Length: 282
Image 1 (cartoon, rainbow, N blue to C red):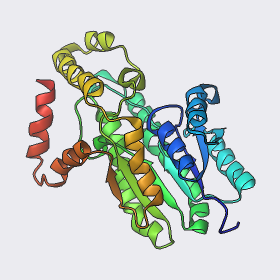
Image 2 (image 1 turned 45 degrees about the vertical axis):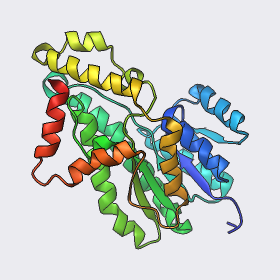
Image 3 (image 1 turned 90 degrees about the vertical axis):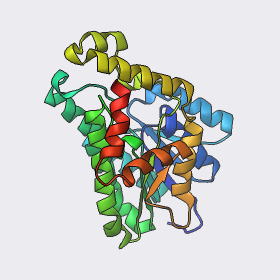
Image 4 (image 1 turned 30 degrees about the horizontal axis):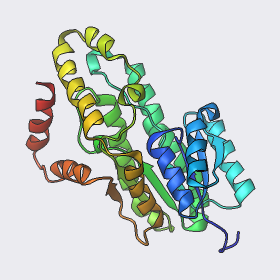
């Protein structure tokens, strides 16, 4: 491993959105980027963005819920590039439901992708990040700081990721590995496609919770439509975590995200957060 060779970063969940933008921006900044996704057949937008930016990406399969896939991807990076300097855990899936209207099995599935998938990739990568004094970066969400109505399972997974990484950070730092989390708010990707539901059907099936769900969806879809940040803007925080001399543990992707999570971090009794989120379902 030559000190002069380009640094290598593995990014998960690069078929669209922040993962795609982060992969391209890292390549433009001079990194060798291994851009992974569960289904390489969905890499068309990724390859087109790379071509438009004039950069090369090493596109590979990685399913964060499949241990064999993770092992194969990490071992392949080491075999072909000789080093691993950073990981960006971006792969995840949205989920909208409330406890009475979903099974515990569905909640476990959300945790499997958004929490255990992050842990599995991080565990496989850590020995190699120790060897390079590397960086472990996880894209979480403002929903990993403030719980949001009808996002109980999703927010629980993101809370868990934030707690795990905050706890891991000083342990990893003692061995030269920097740990950071990146917290986006609404990003201009397909909200409905990401959560995988038909909105009308979801409301019709919500039973006593239908009025609250309808109000929440109207507010949230409007936010994603009217005031969302671009994936490229959000990816700037990922690039900062990759390149800063001493990256912060917690990075928000916009002024709105900083203000939003600031409500929670200064809310000792919880009244400010609940006063805010109750209004989303009224």
